[in-house]
Image (cartoon, rainbow, N blue to C red):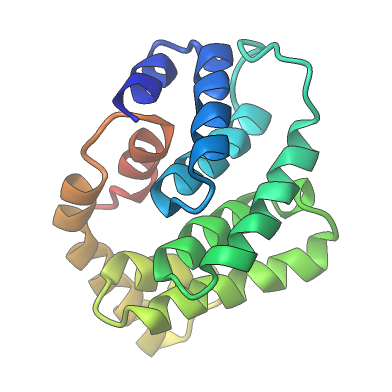
Length: 171
């Protein structure tokens, strides 16, 4: 994965994609590879400034990988967090907007329920919905509790780590 992360950091997205495809075909059951590949595809759709030039229907590939992930990893909190977050930010990339917006919230809720002690999952779930006063206090606490965990868990290279460090570092 280090080689792929270096390619992502250098914005050599075509080369990173080819390595991901090789890894996915060699070990399709590996969640670590799947999560970075899924996030890579999501990132290629949303923010690459034309630097990904492989002729590929990214939306179709992203939907396929979401289905693969649901079939293999739906019991993992981290799967529900990453997929739920990605769907929630851009639900129209995955299909029916209203249906998927609801699905996103369900996945984020499931992640927070599967790992009750994970403040990042709680922060993402609470941040996905309208909050009452008590929930707002829980959200603020989750943000505070997440700070050091985010710095540690997402300290590495690669699009997923860089994105989550940037987006979830809340003050």
